[in-house]
Length: 279
Image (cartoon, rainbow, N blue to C red; front, top):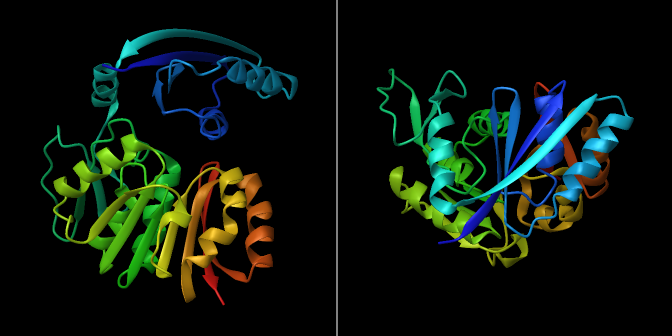
């Protein structure tokens, strides 16, 4: 059985949105907010000095005053136990509800329920960026074909087909995400409409989609901009998140220079999602 490392981060104050946004840019597996701390899940070989360096930078910028970082190693099975303790039923929009399979929920008339068990993957519906993406999907995607890049749990692809997309391709370069995605599309009875793949955007052989979704860190969005745009049909949409408020200018500068135009921006706390159209 594989082992994983758990880092416990305490800071004063605890700016959760800022910290999680920066930590997700590192090579981590997941984050759980617990009272006054953040639990950060990483592989055993992870160099925690990068977290220390990041905290020291935040100290220098006066974003935090103090911090403490400790670590321990745990077995794979404990990851799911940690998630199950913290997962809740989430009303993402007045119409969209996300629930873990461990909790019962009777939907109101007109509600769409997504059943998502995160396992080792990002995309539970708790994080602002997932909520923003689903809000944008609900408004703009009700037909056609969809690609979900960096799919995590598969939640965005599942949401898209539940809202009317004909089919979706969901891809992630993490084998855990592939396995988790397969489980979640089965939980939601959409295996006939959602295809899960392991790899990167360039590994998708299909030439183009009506909509492409990418909830990924800013630096990755900038690095793969050309590849993402290449997968959008002319006139199609590209929905991006993983973007902090101060990052929108850099994202828009890059994508508009490549022929995309902004349709709408969605904001929740410190985060944004941007809907773009290919000309």
